[in-house]
Length: 574
Image 1 (cartoon, helix red, strand yellow):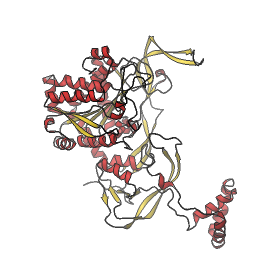
Image 2 (image 1 turned 90 degrees about the vertical axis):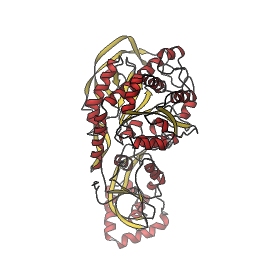
Image 3 (image 1 turned 135 degrees about the vertical axis):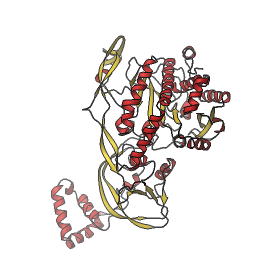
Image 4 (image 1 turned 90 degrees about the horizontal axis):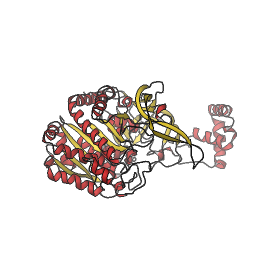
């Protein structure tokens, strides 16, 4: 079994542990060392437990999630690093690498004492348990080993790296409980990439710096990242940013990946955690990928401890920024006018005639290596900002959304009695919906929103959510319908977009006639409408429908977004 600390073993066997073997390997470490423990933190969709491996001075007393939470709450002056493995079990490098990394640290007394003095490490051995149990040889077509591995989808065929906001899986619920229990300063998700061919064994996604914001973003870009890349270079493992191609081959440039909150690091950034995704290159032999991942985990830990004070200070500054923010960006666009020159080492791209399709195909020629600067587009500009109200209001009927807020530690107050409040209300006037399912949902995109002030009937048990609390960024990016991964985007509010009552034309004809006869203003507006939209209003049903929607018979709440906002903007904590 390849356990990461000895790449030769992996090379000879080209295997990665099964789920039960991986758990046994971590349990073996826990049995041998008082400073580590292996606990269950939740249940996966396949019914098997999700584990966390905890490396901490108090590990012997940590037997469940609640004990872990209490321990972390009492030691927030210690840095914490959370590692997530096998979210895509066909990309198992992190599993082997984590075992090898922890073995190396625990068997080196000097190194172990440094960690125990400065940093807690929490590792999820295999997050996608259902996918890990669905073991096969061949589903990762473009990957060099191992011989057998798990499947990308979980037991519900969900891609769990699209599930961190919508939280459809029990896996995601377990993850957010663990995440909020340990409050990590650094988070790493381990993957194997796909796409172009090039010389690097390791590529890295750092949470997008403009989206990370004006405090964390510059720290990542100007301070942490340069040192991390330099350390990997010194270890003989040069890295490059994740090769997200602009146009077919690296020579044309690469684009910084905008990992919105559906992705792990997009989610963790909502809570001021420094997020990274390790992407080992799929065409490098499996033992080399494992070794590159192990080195990254090792150097990330060492650099994190070296910069512990700076990291904690930056996170405090970010939390202070959020505490007094009046507006927050919720949607970004790539700025193609802003690129930097990135030194890149690649293979020559050849165009040949395919013997199969008889058309031009791409082939990378390893015998010809080139090194040159390429464009790197990693600047994003804000498209939408949300103005933060003093509070949001969500009717209890939308319990799926309320549940997800609660799982993320959002504080909510239930109304004690029925009441009517005057609130800011959004109407989704125009939106598009995808015509195919995506990860168990279809995606919505708003085109036009109309804001009005209305009296809203609320009931005892409906929820008031103050914005003067931790988690404000999570609220902004889930409740503003324009956000990339809002709950509107993920179609949690679709039933609010349907008209429930209608009319029969032959009956409404008489009512419409009376309306026009008795309301000169309405008649004038009707004439204007027919003049402005002659094609649409040439249809009799369209004319009647327009009149119906101006009448007292129309229900009026169609497309009313059921997340209401206070008339006053956010108050700041004293």
